[in-house]
Structures are given as structure tokens and as C-alpha cells.
Image 1 (cartoon, rainbow, N blue to C red):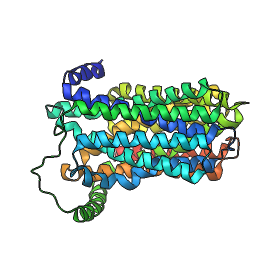
Image 2: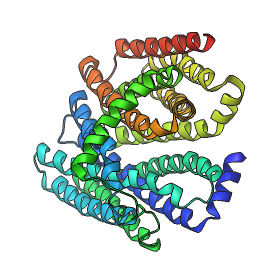
Image 3: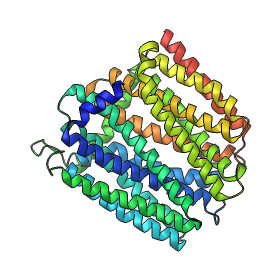
Image 4: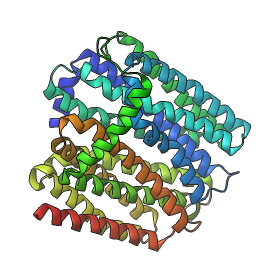
Length: 422
């Protein structure tokens, strides 16, 4: 299998292995932490979770990526990246421990969300530092392409595995608040391990180069703001990349709306107690994660035969047909199959979109365009949660939402097919 062969080549590089280990530990901790927060917000017996509460939790988890993402590079080009990985993960371990104490102590929601927001804000710098460091541990441009493909996929799988571990911890305890706290403490331990593992790399290995000229922070932030506007103008001139990015943003919106639907179904419609509902959600997360992995395997085959835009059309069309067929019964087994299908189609379209943007955008603008991509990707998910909060009834059974999502998928497929023919 080409993926396995490529990974074997990369793993022969010692420094790449060490950086990858930091990524895996860090993103596994992210998975544990995010599922622990979701379980506390949605499945705590003392809380009556609503779509609005879920939307608030998603905003806390994702908006720091959107707000800080475009400017994280300004500071990462000044700070030692190895130290960012060390101190960032150690700081997250401490903040996650505080979150666990707030969960046990029954702190007010605003204080709990403030603590969670702090952890996810630091996470933006750690993930950006991992990406910025990758060229320093790969010895050729050809291997860098493989590394950029494999590292994020491995990180996503690690996050999924971490989420599964959080489900196991949560279900192993009968006390909801205590089990949530234990899961958060597990995330804190993994963050600490990620920070300590970074010490295996020399302090100057990951850069940045000390000799590179640097503007003052205020000047650099102003330049970054102007750069985003320039990236947007450049993207408007690259129609292929702009259309693919718009399609991916809408597909991410659909995925977010259905995620909130699934959470509400697991919480209220399919279970008589919190443990059963949480177990069903765990199966759904596993099914979606399997879809993500399948996308990494089949997307190269699909793009070879259909082209990149053709593969995006195929993913959107598949979702448009199967999403209402599997979703409208509002039954667990079809919805779990749907979670796999949407994981595959969403991630498959994202891999193709990443490639389209990389190939269509000038190298001088690529970083700024991907910063915009990052903002759109996360804002779409949070926006979907907000729309779902307005449309969903308490038990999550909304025919209107499922049909609306199917129409959006069909519109994406038709628009991209028309653009591809032209």
C-alpha cells in the first residue's frame, strides 16, 4: 500500500519520528479533552443540554483557531518552536488540570468555558508550531509532500483514538462529574507527555533561523492583516481554488449541522440513560473516524480516475443521496452508517481541496490562503452549530434540517460539476 510505504520512508528519519510523536501525543490529548468536554456539556445528569449549549461548546473549542490562526505565525517566527511545543503542552496540562477541578467543584458555566477556551487557544500555537517545524525534520521536498499528507492524517487518527479513550474512561465510572474530571486529567497527562517528549529534540532544531530579519510585533501583525486581504484578492483571481474552497466550506457546514443533530439524538432520542447515549456517540465517533481513514486510502485512487474536482463532485453527490436515505429514519444503525459515509466524503473532499489550493495558488500567497482556509473551515462548523440550534427540536429529530443539508450537498455537486465542464 503506497501510504504504508511512504510512512516507512519517513519513519526512517529520526527527527521526523520525534516530531510526529509530539503531534500524536498532543492530538490524542486534544481528542480526550474535547470528548470529555462534550460529555460534560451534553451527558452530565445535572445538565439539560440543548442545541444552544452544544453550539456554545463548539464555539469555545473552535473559535480560537479562527481568531488566532492567521496571526500565530507572526509569533512563531520569533519564538523558538521547540520551546513552543514544550511550554505550550506543559501550559495546557496545567490548564486542563484546572478544568478538571472546575468540573468536580461544579463551577459556574462561564468559568468552565473560560478555562476550556484557554486550553484551545494555546492549542492553536502548538498545532501551528508542529506544521511550521515539519520542513526542518524532512530532508527533501518530495518527502515534505508526503509528510504534509501523512502527519495531519496521523494526528486526526490520534485525536479519534483519544476520543475513544475518553469514552472508555467516562463509561467506566458511574459518577458523571468524577468520570468527566478523570478524562480531563487523562488529557492533562497526555499534554504533559507531549511536552516532555519534545525535549528529545535539540532546542534549535525546529527554528526559526536566528539570522532572518524580523519586524517589530506590531508591524508584523499589521503586515499579517494586510496579507490576509491580499490572500483573499489573490484567491478571487484563482477561480478553481476559490470554487473548491467554497465547496469545502459548505460541506464542513453540513458536517457540523449533522454533528449537532447526532449529539441530540444520542442524548435524548435513542437512550434511556446517559451511559447508553454516550456509548452510542462513541460508536458514531468511531464510525466517522473510520470514514476519515478510508478517505486517506481511497482519495488518491478517486482523484486519479475522476480528477480533483471530479472527486469533490463525487463526494458531494454521494452525501446528497445517502445522507437523507440514512438520516431520515432517525434510527441508530442507519445514522452510524451515515457517520462513516460523511466522514469519508467530507475528508475525501478536503484532501482534494487541499491539493487544488496547493496547485492553483502561487507559492508567495499559499500561506495566507491557507490561513483563510483555516478560518473558513472552523467558522463554518461553528456557524452550522448555531443554525442547528435554531432548527433542532429537543430530541434532535428534524426532517427540515436533514433535507436542507441534502439540498446543500446536491447544490455543491451540481455547481462543481458545471464548473468542471467549463
